[in-house]
Image 1: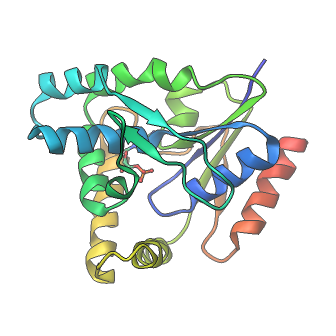
Image 2: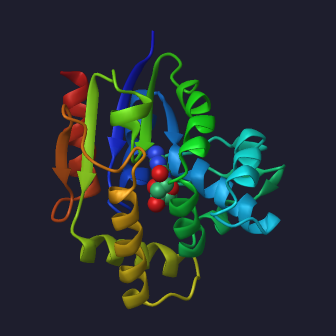
Length: 221
Ligand code: DC
């Protein structure tokens, strides 16, 4: 028996950090579905495949040599592509934007569906993404839609990237996130939207610890 908690929302709302902490506190597994699309995007960029080349993308998606390494509460999990640690390459906005493009391909999403569902193993799973509550785990008993204002999300991403030593401009970042959200929300297949039975949490003016507390309370109820 495995309980699934889904946490969906736009980029930079804090889903990754919050999902990881909730999973750790519960002793559950954590699925970062964005990293799956980002890894596929990176594999496509490395292979010189663009988002219009559906057949090649599908082939990459079906044979993605991806490994997630165990995470801790205050550190991102590491991601290996074909045995090579690509974690740092996954986080930049170029990969994020390509991930959003490859993710609007229906056949690609279908190919990655079962892999995601296979993560729902005992005792529980926190699944973070865009369509966790609407498509991948529609029967999850707890669904969260985590959001925050665009400015706050861009600001958080900016701080994260600067802390990693990357050279980014806040204005460009804001525009990239805005374009990516718009694409994720308006695509035909599995668009980003709250599930009908999701609880919406706006994290603009509350801390990570408060959001985590709210979610743990919902789980323990
Ligand atoms: O959560 P993230 O920023 O790492 O996600 C990167 C992109 O991947 C996002 O812009 C859209 C896509 N994605 C998706 O379509 N479905 C998911 N469940 C997760 C991510």
